[in-house]
Length: 270
Image (cartoon, rainbow, N blue to C red):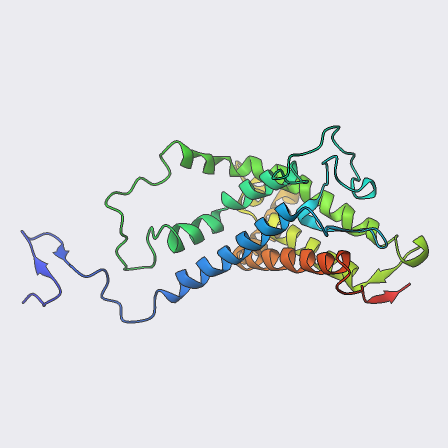
């Protein structure tokens, strides 16, 4: 006997007119994901185009949203790798080199793809929930083929992580009086760098770099050791993806508050 929610047609699959028969709050996950991604995108966009309060010369704090600072308008001390000889138009980010790379790295990340496919594009929004699209095209359309470049964006993002690491390290040697010092800003920057590396190294592409295209792990013990450690990190890639977004905003907000004179850095040593 067919239920009121489905009818049997021609011995094939049951036709279910409802979007889903689930009774739990399946929409909470996609909603929270959308809100989380939107919060970061809005905050990062406002800060990138603010083009101010990004640099604390007393302690050499440079926010990761402006690193490396390459615009002619950058403070000379903040441009550790030099400045381009032309001034950027108002809506061009000071960190023109790094931001597109990091955006493409995260946009094509396997986890983030799953996150925004389900929560924003609703393809599908949840298990056993019908998606609103009439046809499924996967990643076959021209623009979607950009996703295949994730492995290359990984290499570039690793270089940017090295730049962020250098920013963090050099700040320890710009305490009060120019010597070694530790402030709350140093600790926040350190935590942020750790989370950026954890997210980057737990990437599926990084795992493939060390363990892909091998016929036998037995003849490559070092690569196997690296692959197994990265695989352990990869199990929590989703967690690191969200934590790294949080530490990026916290680091930027803290440096911006100090640079604007709203608060003073809490000094621990020197």
